Image (cartoon, rainbow, N blue to C red; front, side):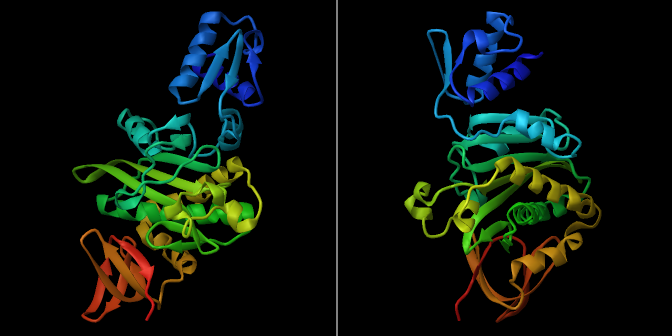
Length: 324
């Protein structure tokens, strides 16, 4: 048994309560040195431990996304393994990018119970408290033209909506380009980043944040009017493992078609979930904005707008419905 596997086994036991050193491993005769290395590994992954008088305790214990629960569900899937799970992490996208740089295979998944530097689009932070959401990043190695990378976050948003509907029965709405809404509140977002070398994509990292069991009471004041969660929308808590697995399945079901045909492979499905066509919007950029009525989505997921100056295609920005 490797030290990392021993650490995962120990974490599973600690999630149920304090564990005496003599009962911490199976078989129990594993050396004290290996036990210390396993504890050090959990600490390095951001789990807070108390080790006193021969008893190990997991501090701030909550409903953990444990490897022993995730790996059996993900086994046989293309996406989700190898799995790197953390208790506390700066950013899953940053960790996944480091793994990708080190030639981690497509499908490598990074999860964290809590992110300290969770990132959204346009430099925003993503509120990522422990134990109530899915904060994850996936390594992809699509053989596509670099310009098609801009559509990968839309693919991620569609997969999230699919996963949520499959597990909860609730039908989310997509807000261009990559936010997911339920009951009028934002419950998930996607951040795509890629590394390009010449005319090829070396890798892409698809970061996803899903508020699963986030209670309204834990929202910071600046998010209290706009953010939500699956629990807030449906009135019950949900199994995070089931939601994560359903999202990855939704991504797998659409990924090959996207790589082959680009955004056109998911265009109709995205449009049916976004409800933007025919509606007036304002698209805000980092250095300006444009207003118009949405006519279509084209190319790599650009919005096609009818503006006062004619027809315009918008590749980046954030679209909000405009009140006439």
